Length: 116
Image (cartoon, rainbow, N blue to C red; front, top):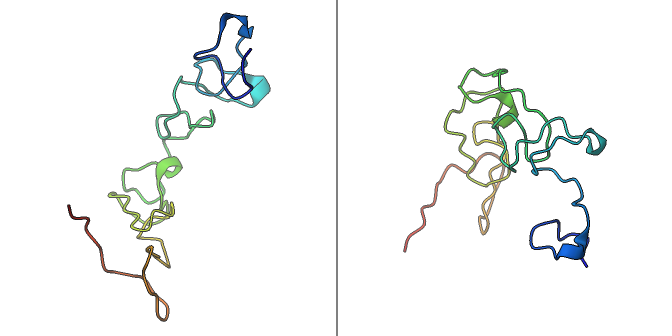
C-alpha cells in the first residue's frame, strides 16, 4: 500500500491510480494548476507551484522578469541576496548575517567569503 506522501514513484503495483500532483506534466484545473511543465523550477514560465509566470514584465528593466526578480523595482541584474532572505541586496533595508552583530540601523556592507 502507498503512503499518502509517497506519490507514484517507487509505489508498489497495488497503489492504484496516481494522485494528481504539481510537476507531473499534466495540468489539473481541479488542483488550481494553471500550468504544469513537468518540473519544480521557477522562472521558466511555470512556477514550482504550477502557476503561470509572466516573463514579459520587467519594471526595473534589468533583464530579469518581475516574476523572478528579487528586487523588481530596482535594477539588480546580479540578483545578489547576501543574507538569503529572498529580498535582493539592492532593496534590502536590513541585511542580517548569521552571527553578525548589528549596532544601529542600516545595511551591513561587508561581504564574507568562505575558505577551505
